[in-house]
Image (cartoon, rainbow, N blue to C red; front, side):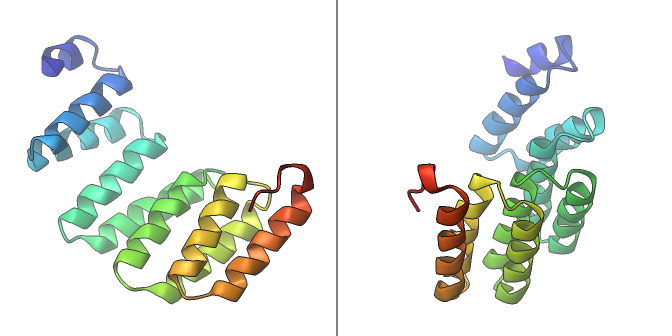
Length: 151
């Protein structure tokens, strides 16, 4: 039912994401990869599409390609916190804690007022075994956002 709608409205990215989700849920990974590649072809700056493409590469064992996609996307959209979030998750899943921590610190320096990133940074630093650094990030957040501090 979604496929005819996607063919009728080829530039409707939300329909393509619905189709992607359905194909992944059904275990049709090769078809899902085709859909995500088409999303990125039609919308090359779409961060969600690029993140999905990176995850397809990672699931296929092509970690280097997944990392390249995300690093390139961060270079084009450095203010988007979702991109380094996905990059750090890949590094953590593969046990590269030092690299993950480096990306967390680089992104905190680049996005010091992004509350989403500050919260994720605390979680990531804890996963890296850096509790003191996570506590420092939380304290900095309380100083930066005293009226909304709940960290």
